[in-house]
Length: 332
Ligand code: SF4
Image (cartoon, rainbow, N blue to C red):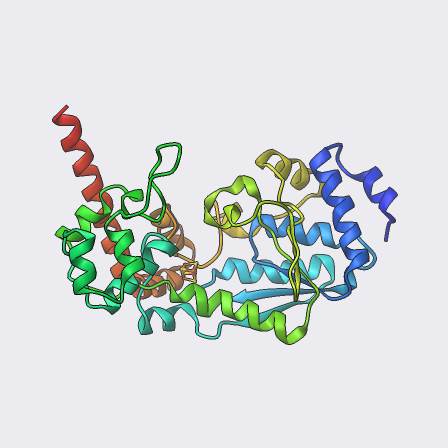
């Protein structure tokens, strides 16, 4: 193993990469029991490579949380990582895998937040009425927060943009749902039982003092906006995101310099992300399905069973939005 100076001397001449090497080194010195979540995705490939540069990498427990809807390519890739770096990646199974959650609670639709509000409304047997908040709250008195979302009751942001707490944040969603009330249960519980709760329990059981994972600010989406910096301190277990500041270009430099090989999901299937196969939250789920049909037909059949209603409802919503936009354009 090399010391820090040697690692830096051999690193690409790039400030973001240099900084991540120095800070990760410091964290590995300071913490004793470190959890590193491996997803099999391209960011996580860099994370593992970075961690394995140090001689105290043996403080790290690598873990893969198996949601129950994973690409075979991801599983194969975990085996490759284990072999390349001589590490063990522990596979932790979901408390309730995604297919079971979807059957029990409902299917995810559009986004985590939207699914949450719809789930609450469905629990109160909401009839998707287009009435004002003051009237609806009398009919559904226990459902205030979700009704505020439905009635666009939150103020717009200071820049004039729609608040993400309002249904109008998703253009024409309310109009669509009034005209086409969902005929199936919608829920975001699979994320909870297949991901969040599993990770939380595992962290508590094993008493880690640092949790490392691959999130980049530049990747966008709800996940990155939950964090402001690469580090957050916590009562039980601190959190460190070593490649938080990497840009797409930084990733390219790192991957080329250290000869990082990504899973077949990227190199053969042409996907831009990995994670739960066919998750309906993905804007590109149709492309993903097409790749799946070609490369992993059994998984294709499975996800179409699990998410069939959500796929159909999402496509119908997209068509609706397109029609509304066309009508608006025609009308000037
Ligand atoms: S990412 Fe999608 S499929 Fe996976 S657990 Fe979350 S909502 Fe369910």
